[in-house]
Amino acid sequence: MSHEPPIYLDYASTYPRREEVMAARRQFEESSYANVGRANYDLAEAALVAYQDSKKTVAAWIGCEPVEVLYTYSATYAINLLALTMEHNGVIQKGDTILLSLSEHHANIVPWQMLAERVGAVVKFVWLDEHYCIDLDDLKNKLDNTVKVVSLQYASNVTGAIHPLEKVRDIIGSERLFIVDASQMGLHWPLSMSDIHCDAMVLSWHKMMADTGIGVLALWKVLQKAWQSPVSGGWAINFVHTDGYEQAGIPERWEPGTPHITGAVTLWAAVGYLQKISPEQKKDYAHLIELIDARFESYIARGLQVFHSRKTGSIGVWSFALSGKHPSDIADVFADQGICLRSGHHCCEPLHEHLWVAWTVRMSIGYDTTQAEIERFFAVLESLL
Ligand SMILES: Cc1ncc(COP(=O)(O)O)c(C=O)c1O
Image 1 (cartoon, rainbow, N blue to C red):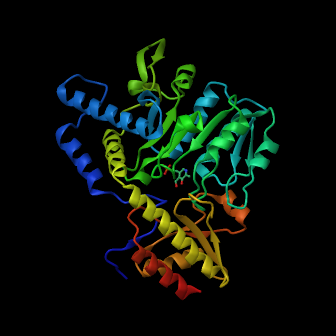
Image 2 (tube, protein in one colour):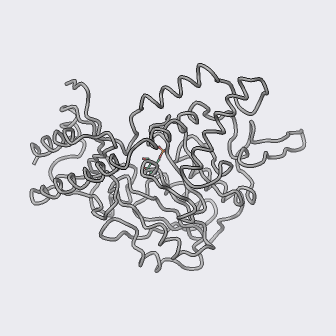
Image 3 (cartoon, helix red, strand yellow):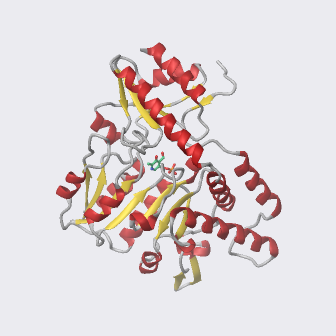
């Protein structure tokens, strides 16, 4: 059945493109498209300026310096790159512990498990509290001298929970490395690496209206200077001889090959779009979350299981399950009505095990979601109960 236009409620997966972002991309491609860091003609200079301006904009958005912004091809790859970098520089060794929370996306689990396997380290998981936030008492219990890295998401892509990261930093102290996966938080500024005092932050920009195929690893300058990069080639290298090579300076040594230049332009444009979202729009978004929470709650007595953090400030992501109905069949019913939802474990299998459900259906909203769309969603849900 075709529905025009469909009701898109899968913002946690990827944010639909906005005309401003597509227009900036088109304009760049028509007027300044060239490779960066390889030539001095005007077009190449213009492309380099656009690439660097993008980093300035991103740096201002997340509270760091432009040189601290590294572009990768996804948030997932950013965490892999960080884990490889730590291994390459002997930061994690046999017997060390990497602490994560049970709420993490696989992107913030598997790279650490693979690293641990390779060097003989251990990955441990901290429990969640009743709001699906990291349990600070359990964190304290698990914090022994072997813990070298704590890597946590900022907001959950299943429950919308926001973790108390500043408190986490206080608890873990300044000696341990603290990594933040802010993939679901880019839309919900202010985001400040310096306020959180994390050592690295990872973002997924297609969830913020920009191109797919570009992610951010923000890493303090002092760490970039202290560490060698495990990857190379292109402008990541200063010189190469038959008997050796020299890695480029920072941040290029972490960006081998030609970067996603047009993607970088869309980051800059996406931030521009987000900056125009008014305090009223943000208030409307928060209000819509409250309304949706109340509606979901009213169905719990009728057998609906809802997984959403009721803590103030949680983001607009709800996962739910209905006993006797397979989540993918539920999502199909919604799809037949033109409503786009995701079903599955949402790349969070340990969290689903913790919640005692194999799969859930997920509904997530953006700044453009309307009350009428939500009414349509609940009308279909009601028909399933
Ligand atoms: C919390 C979280 N971390 C990481 C990712 C992975 O992002 P990317 O698609 O940029 O690799 C996602 C995507 O759903 C996510 O929600």
